[in-house]
Amino acid sequence: MSRRYPLSDDPIENLARKRAGAKLGWFIHATVYVLVNLLLVSLSLSSGRHWAVFPAAGWGIGLLVHGMVVFFLAGGSNWHERMVQAERERIVQNNHRA
Image (cartoon, rainbow, N blue to C red; front, side):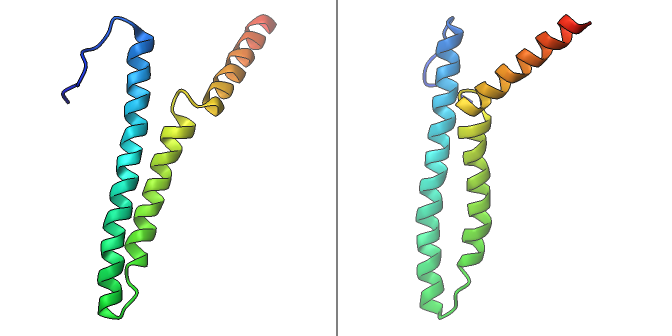
């Protein structure tokens, strides 16, 4: 995969670019989802059948999972950071007990 910008020596810059790229990837995925499903709905309605709901639902589940990974589970979300902090505290507590 070619990168638009060379890797920096700054790990924070690299992480920020990676996270921004993941979010941009999700927005592109969502845009393609909407456009393709608009086309499928128009084809479905023109045929008099309502089959477009099935690919929209299946793909929608994939889009939802993609969004959850990018915005909630990947590093950078507050939820993820709270989980990491809780794990750090458990590790410290367990090491002090031993």
